[in-house]
Image 1 (cartoon, rainbow, N blue to C red):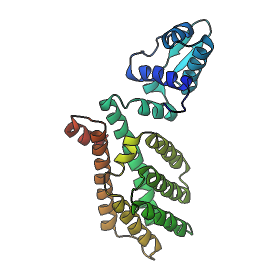
Image 2: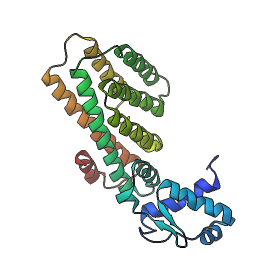
Image 3: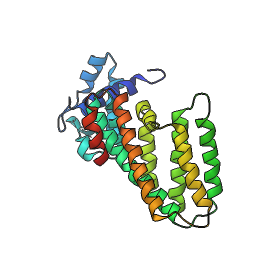
Image 4: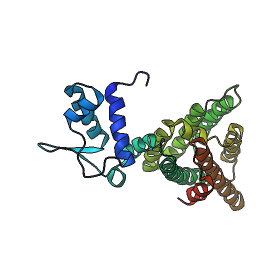
Length: 258
């Protein structure tokens, strides 16, 4: 586990049991003594572990009762969902369902931002956007392109578009989605189901429109929207392959409409 601590490792193991349903909502987590005994720890460390689960949002502490397991799927916020997604990797079907939902949300935010910015009046930030696209192209054409670095640049581009549009809530959600995806290598790789060069080509095409006096035609916008949807279907399908999901043929269509 590298430089991860015993507290983090054991807390993740207990959180994984909650995520998988091994520990049911409304039930009690193992006590401090039980955690200490199972993982051969002292009780002070076991107390820290259960306290961390509370900070994760997986349990609620009640004096004299213990730590009660929350219904994290129904009640959890973005941070809980992020942790659930990372912990879901050993369960391919669950991971696929969660990733499909993540991609669907990201697609909606990204498409709205791209269409709104491209069809509207652009500001001085276009030159800064082009600089980021140059950086993306340099990475894409390198000997060994780094998917995480490229994805961070693309998320940064979308973040700047949302800032220019004044869409602060969507930007916050996009930031959370980026954190979820970047923690899972299979998810990062899936976003490059298409060649990195194709990513650069799309951004270059958009930049050309942003620099022009006129906006895109309705036919161009419709075509872009169709291509965008097809790309995200490929992203979800690639994720299924990477996590070893056997029933990929059934999962991919579901992802497109999740």
